[in-house]
Image (cartoon, rainbow, N blue to C red; front, side):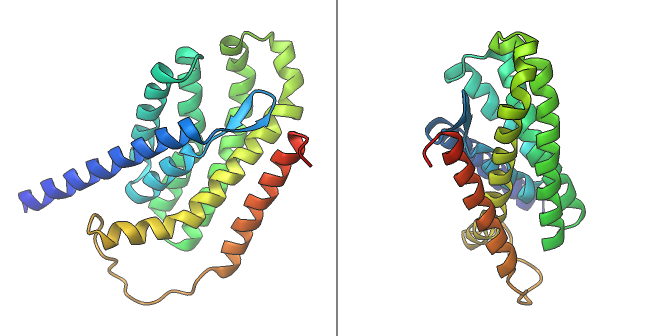
Length: 220
């Protein structure tokens, strides 16, 4: 029994390390300009997947690890920027993971991701007001002027993409991990109805967010 528990802990640690590495890579190479100096990257999607699989603490640990590595390698915003990254990621990923942990069902996943979306937008608007002047060197009055035309659309687009991508990727990732034996097989073998409409909605959310990015960058 102890040997099996140790093996499971080792597998979990390996998966978390893998997710942290993937999150860092997609953050480093997948940055997309949205508005002004604000860029979107999909690292929160990877971290949210870790949270849905292993719980909110896992999402927090991955978020802290990736943010610290980003701070010492790519970022020029120092410890304040690192804290902002952690708060941004955790407000989305940990919220979704907490809800899903309490209600492990399709409804719980959707509710968690939507709550994560709204929580992230609300929290980051407040934190942008409080901390952006400190690490960007902008007067607070200038930041206030950017809240609605820049920070609000950015946070809405970012959180919408994170929620939609996480929803679409969760099942394939779980299936892949179970296929390799990293995660145990599902106990319930009954075939559930495929949420085709939710997949369509998630795809439309992504398309809409991408179109807004193109509009904000004067591409269309």
